[in-house]
Length: 155
Image (tube, rainbow, N blue to C red; front, side, top):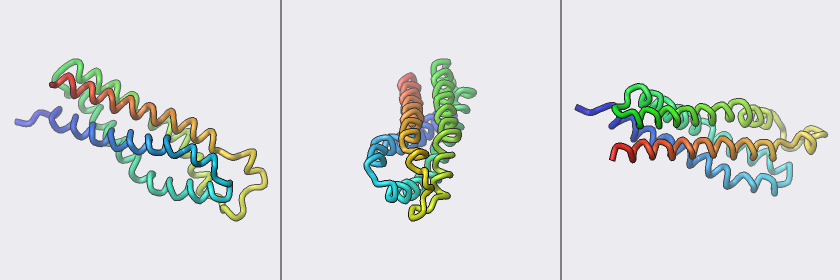
């Protein structure tokens, strides 16, 4: 009979790897945003967000749900504790996304790159978005490493 950990942990590693990788890509690419002229930045940001938005929430949530299940059903205390820690890290990454990055993304999606607000230079969210993106990316990578540690416990 297949144990829950044999399904949940590989799925958590896969989904967490996708999430951490996607956020790592955005962390590495984000400095490019600061070099773009404002008129180009808004459409580039919009274009990237529309590609990451459906993918990232599904990856993060899938990993979180697997980790929560592992925390409850894991057959070893170390696996349960590591899964609980990974779930906490993922919840923190999702909280940063929902409270910091997503509001910026939504605001930018309402803007017309050809008719930006007069005070856009004052409102320009690039540095804030990049800072919070680093935070959530670091949390997702930490969650992935925690799940890798849980897998190592089983070896």
